[in-house]
Length: 334
Image 1 (cartoon, rainbow, N blue to C red):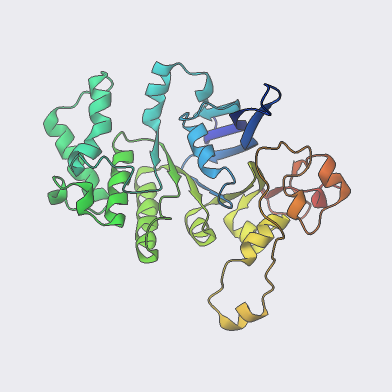
Image 2: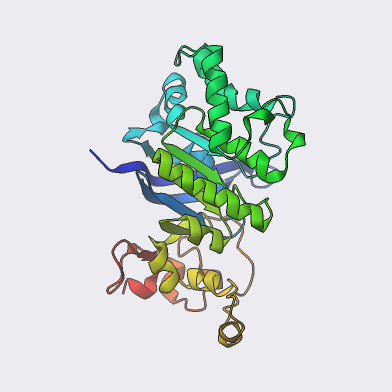
């Protein structure tokens, strides 16, 4: 059997935007995700990083089938989610839960903490997938609250009575209620203070160790991604441009975009920081409403060649690179 929890193959998510011009003509699309592939092993954390608008959150929604992908396959423990019926998808979602970015808007303000955490259990019990008494559900809620660092005596409080970090802990507890194998975390700490971010990240690590979970962790903060991830995938304009072990990728970035991203991370050493050269990319991120025949990074790349505009580079492991360290760039394919 495969050791992969999740396999994504040539995933595309194109949003229809109408027709060009007054008279119906060519259809217009936003190419939010345009053919990405990656794997996530059991018990592993894959960090997906990139600028705002590169398609990270769309990947999470397409993987979880909240958006129906335009093309591609999403295999959860070998089962293709894109071909499942509504009933089959309902069953599969027990194995895959989400933690959202905003810890306030993702919680129902009319429900108590206990009701929020118990809601997934209640839904699956009502459909006959779980057999638990009310007392057992209440006990499970208290256990989950203590697991994420909340006192069980807070279970009758409403979301507005908690801090941002505490609300995110409630969201994590809700995601764990059905004992999933995969957590899709969509920038779960970006709305929190730095000190609270550290606490929540440590909580994610502790829970993973205790429950053997796999994480697809989305963030734009490179320090967060480095701390939480086993492997990292760098995204730009709907495509993955580099993947690798977090140590290899930070020590030896290959793609020009990855180098520019890492050069923007401040180093807490004044002497090193003063001597370090910052890579400033020219221009803005192009609009994703145009499908490009060549490299997605061509317009801003300081090392582009003529071939970069004409065709897309293959995803390869360069000579001398560590195992699994791959890049899509013509600098390494010739």
